[in-house]
Image 1 (cartoon, rainbow, N blue to C red):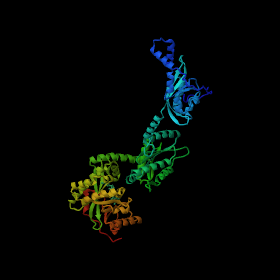
Image 2: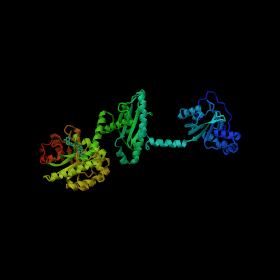
Image 3: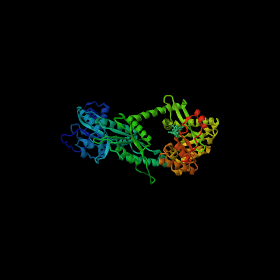
Image 4: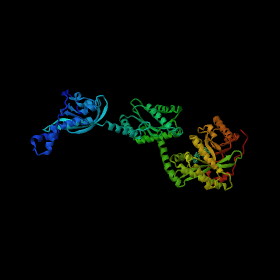
Length: 615
Ligand SMILES: Nc1nc2c(ncn2[C@@H]2O[C@@H]3COP(=O)(O)O[C@H]4[C@@H](O)[C@H](n5cnc6c(=O)[nH]c(N)nc65)O[C@@H]4COP(=O)(O)O[C@H]3[C@H]2O)c(=O)[nH]1
């Protein structure tokens, strides 16, 4: 049989034979019937006739499947007969194989579970079937579904084994293709999440035995979406394939790289004896990602953020390790991207809080737990309040007053920001209209818009509805959009801004100076106002660089006929500096913190002190 029992003595080489030497149970019965059974037994007579015609023999010869008959004598089980199909499939002639044990069909590939089953079946003289990897004479692999059965003589003693072989290579390769598809990412050919989980579980079992560590790295490409959206999906695919190859090239063969979703990858790094895992490996990975990517004969550069969870310290099951590495990656993103973070309990705590906030936010909309505070904005020439900025707060039943930095990002991720933003817009318009009726007819209000709101096609329609329902004049509403939000898709932003401008509302760029505005774009945006970010204002008196930036923003804005608002003004010195540079408006704790709507009337009549001597 293929692969049976190691020979101890050389096999007796029988002469090549074509005649099958067996008698199966039926044949035996039939042949007996010729001599011993009554002539009126029609079945027995038919059997006997078939034998006399040599039909069995010729059928075996004609079979499309390989057939082989071996002696039942251990240990060699020498081949006594092979049919023409065997010769065709294996490439061996009958003369080359007769007398040999058939283990040559497996070559060096002897460690196959099927072979052990065959050995057992031969020893126990019973039938069995197994699948084996066999090799043709020219060395090529074929998958063999082998069926083996004992053949008895007239006395019931097993004298031979007969084996029929089915070449199932095609089915196997189809099966393997299906398995590959089910466990690999189609675009990059990397492992997918299911293979990652299996691999990680295996690696953990090995690491437990050897007492070594595993690092699970969650890697996310920074701003990949911007590239994908602006250059097109073809460029995105090229980048992903290149990065997949680079990641694989920067790791060892025992490590694994998987692609989890569009621009997310997971790496399983296993410690090898004498080589501790260390941060240099992470730097090598970051460096591989950072190399120039080519598309359309141009160079592009991407960075990545990574989170690391360590087995066994940070978790002992695969899903948990991946999840914790993901949390750490999120922290790396929050810390400004292009860096890596190791998982800590504090990160877990933050992630839990984010989850709690996320689910509580849903209920907050229905329970009307949000409230707007308003921070006055003042004209620096007259010193008078000309408007306010509406800033959302959440009156959480247990957490108390929650500030937007803790929940706006989560609302943005979950999509709840659309409903929240709509509420802010309507409430700000209504409350401002009410204040106008209290003797401040020109009072304006500025409202922040999030990325998701800005991306909605019905944005202008929503704003128009809020204005109509409240009765507020469009010129009294200022929409604030952050600089980075507009730079993601400049042409799209220009289109959306024009639609808003057509309504008659004022437009302002928030946090100006923190993004990466190309100043060339600025004049293409139909905007009215630039708000200088608080981080520059806070250092204008002490920091030369910040002062120079603020000065340049003001003159740039004036050249483009835009107004400028400085936010976060806290001191008289800052105010004096801004007045001196002819900044138009200010907002900050120096005059007032954001206050509830009820407290605004008392502030609206107040004034900034008159300018002192110029700086
Ligand atoms: N240290 C200091 N801080 C000052 C001073 N003057 C004003 N601030 C704070 O600076 C932030 C100004 O708002 P922002 O830049 O639009 O930044 C806002 C805005 O981006 C976002 N946000 C607030 N309300 C909304 C909203 O209704 N919708 C959206 N999408 N975002 C909002 O949350 C951010 C933070 O809001 P707040 O916590 O209210 O923080 C406010 C305000 O309280 C000052 O003199 N010193």
